[in-house]
Amino acid sequence: MEKKWIYADNAATTKLSAEVLADMMPYLTEIYGNPSSLYEIGTYAQKAVETAREKIAECINAHPREIYFTSGGSESDNWAIKGMARALKKKGKNHIITTAFEHHAVLHTCQALKREGFEITLLDVHENGIVRADELEKAIKDTTALVSIMYANNEIGTVQPIEELGAVCKKHNVIFHTDAVQAVGHLPIDVQKQNIDMLSMTAHKLHGPKGCGALYIRKGIRPQIYIDGGSQERGMRAGTENVAGIVGLASALQRSLVDREERNSRMTVLRNRLIDELLTIEKSRLNGDRNHRLPNNINMCFEGIEGEALLLRLDLKGICASSGSACTSGSLDPSHVLLALGLPHEIAHGSLRLSLGEDITEEDVDYIAQSVKEVVQTLRQMSPVWEKIKNSEK
Ligand SMILES: *Cc1c(COP(=O)(O)O)cnc(C)c1O
Image (cartoon, rainbow, N blue to C red):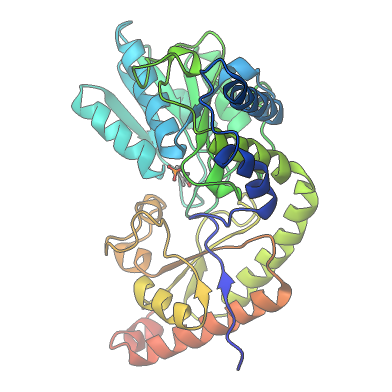
């Protein structure tokens, strides 16, 4: 049989688009000047950075002066949360609200701030992985500096009611940050309409290059300076600009908006086809909300199956998948996201995340379904505990 190769780990990273690379190339080759320089090749680079800023602002309904370039999603999250928390501590605000299933770039940042004396509240995400606006409102106190809630979850793909959550923060005059790394390019973003004060994005999750992202900071909001040095990024984040990366981010974002609705509808059909097929496996479950989820995300548990064993065997069949977050694979800890949904440890171990790419076909989806079924069956036949699980109730 001809060996197939299917990349279904787009939530971990995506393939750099050939068109995006072509847009970046001049800035990796002949236009190498420093954007801060005064001669011609420097000014060309500077112009490219400012054009990219304008394009990105337009895509999220922001002003170009509200876009700051960073090294990616992790840095944007760190800056938004640490920068804002430390700035507001001087005004007596030392409380941060987030959720139990954020990306580690948010969770570990909040843990670091806890060691500095901040109080952290983790909102419940419930069994379906969705935060409730009324619970957020109840958690807000006079000392609340910041709320940080991700737009779409990277493991289970659930999408939060961002506009509603933002409205609660606005009503109580609390800064609202969202890690939108998984949403940008897939879901509509309008920082005005959705009441977003700060938003993190990264290029490599939307067919752009790795190592470049942006943080939107609403006008009038002043987090602490993130990197001291030169006057780049309006003196807030020093360092010679990653010009090619910045051009790549803008290009990838703009391109992701073309045909977005059409692409999403097509992906949703294929996603649902795969979910339905996988749910025919005995003792399987879909994690996260069935409808309020990214069009390309599937996250399933198969009782009695170790996630790692499943992934290795899928790899032999040419399928690239993940057991959840790329950052935790390699460790045997169950996913913090699945634990936050209330799943028991032994089930949270056996998760499979498939994040489809836009070039996926019906044939690919059927091949994935068939392969997962075969591997699950083989592993269960080898498992000493499967018979017991199979015969148990529930
Ligand atoms: C990938 C990811 C990040 C980290 O972005 P990097 O650019 O890799 O630093 C942060 N948050 C979420 C939700 C992600 O999926």
